Image 1: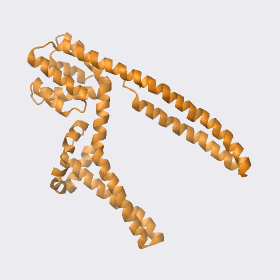
Image 2 (image 1 turned 60 degrees about the vertical axis):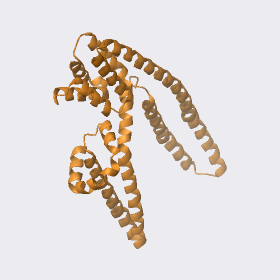
Image 3 (image 1 turned 90 degrees about the vertical axis):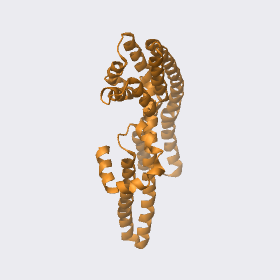
Image 4 (image 1 turned 135 degrees about the vertical axis):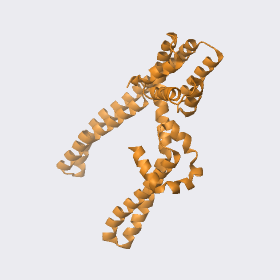
Length: 290
């Protein structure tokens, strides 16, 4: 979907985007590491067209509504909102690859210990290195690591690169420092004649120790978060219900209004806070225990 949209935007604004290419060269490696299969000119075209579209839509919608009641002043308000929304859109496109890079790096870090153990097992069977990465790419449970392995396998089997060159390219495009160290270590082992199985075993042990440390830290954080949840949500809701009933008697508030506020707080506020808590916990949880 993104590819089709970027192709459409490139046809509209490709020539314009090429004029400003040098100012956005820093985005080029980010697009690669983010896994976005589009070129920098296509991405810039998408950024420019989307920004202009947001400005036009915001101006027409908000300015049109405001102009009906405020006249020319309403059109000025529409222009101001259009500029603000277009700035947000432009900045959003600029930082979006960075967000994807960080997200992919986190996913790779979570599954890399287990994937490295799998690589170590395959290396012990005498399987060739290209076949090892081919097998790893077929294991969907390893997520982004499998995608990185698929790219290495593609470079070797489809583009005809030797395995050493494919590993160097993988190290340059991966968003994960851990995976970069892994492929450089593999490349060093095969070029120096070292034991690939022993290297992978030691690397898997190091990564697993780091994973266990992060799980322990998560357990400590989770205990603190649970205490905060109990205090804010459970105890807080009881206090709010009691206090609102007491305060209503002093403020001469309508009983129906008090009941309405309490119902909204309990049946809307509490589920919303609980959902945000779950999302936050899933976000900080190491992979494998979500």
